Length: 439
View (cartoon, one colour):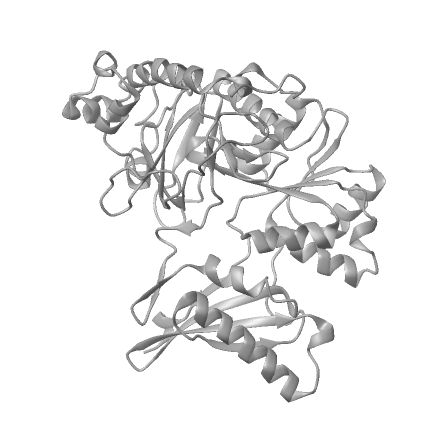
């Protein structure tokens, strides 16, 4: 399948055929193995595995390369994974490092140019055009989400407003004053913003925004649909992680049926997180990624710990870059209650499909004796939190029943008043683990 002749694209790489993609990946895999071996870490790791650029004969040979983990990145702090002299590096991004050594990613100027192009391409397939006014509501600084999408928007040609995170009053004024048509916003903050607008007496649907680019935290289809309905926008899912650049790794096109991962820049695998065997299309496993174009600090077979899968079939947009399903959670997000594996995303999926439920909820983990328990606090929309205890009890029972059907356990459910749970203008904290607080 080739890109339809009437389909616009930002760059030629979007229109590559499947054969062209795989040929380019093989060529670039050989090259990136050669580059990576210049770093002390990969020089040793690849030699132990007997992998050289010349030994790569097919894309299947990527599985001969050992995995790289976050602990590896921390262990090589600060410069153990760089492959060029320090004077050729022009930027670094880093995690906070609050629980140990941070993970640091370095970029050359060529790396930043490539990243900006991937981000511009990602925005383009979601319908953003140079005529749009773009407001970036992500944090700047060491966090990749701010600068990554900022340079992509400028590369695309949008008037770009670097608003940064938080300060809702200023965000709304900028949107209204400059007729902003595209936002980059965290899903939980988008839902929070609706509440803020209503409190200020502003109808969210009167804003000029037509597209919301949402990412930086996992969210369900139910959350996306609620954002679209409340803000009267089209909301496009994105995926990125700082180890692979940040935003611009994979993005939804206008058809909203999966995230096109840019395979000219990355090799993507889905593996069983326990056996590490490759999984076929349609099955969920751990996402493993290899950079193909980064020069300053390439990373090979990085275990992201994110859970997703390849979607089968073709996309109506005509692009043949494979599509990832939305991220379902992380292997290290899993909660085990009464022997059952539970991911917080399962709870959100249930709650946001219930009409009476508001935008906020909290999962509390606690202990009763030696048994771990789960309690779900759920805000109801203002019109549904009434004094009629029978009505509240009916809603509570319905929520509990639907959670039991999804989770296979019955968590305690507490319905609470609108705006009563803690809120944040950053990433939402959905899980409170109080089990360690019990003596």
